[in-house]
Image 1 (cartoon, helix red, strand yellow):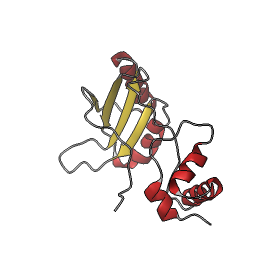
Image 2: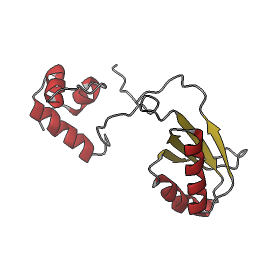
Image 3: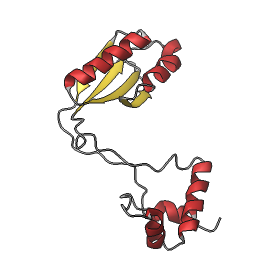
Image 4: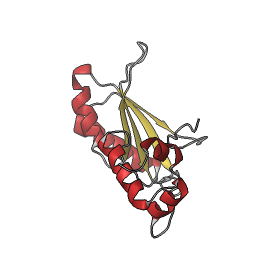
Length: 155
């Protein structure tokens, strides 16, 4: 591989250029050829260092103004099965198992997005019915203070 994975990870832009050849533009910024950049990104993906390169949808700007974090009480023996089923819903953008800390009964967390509170509630009802979990709490977002993707430290 001609390109340096470390250099690519350190220098790659986080605002994808909206051009006819975005990889060419990014490669020029980094100081390598477009082909080197693409090969390096393929290598990083193959090695599991990066998962994907994708556009980020700012859901509020796309009229999905409501989002709900739903915490679900799921028995330990059912977590794998239920988590995969919940994650299969297109309206679910995040689905995590979390430690309950010994003070909280909820072990699966989902983020659900909708154009209205009713949309979100309908998704929660569909999930609940499909997985057979009726013990959950819903927390709607009031205000967003920060939303960003993970960035690499440039030290």
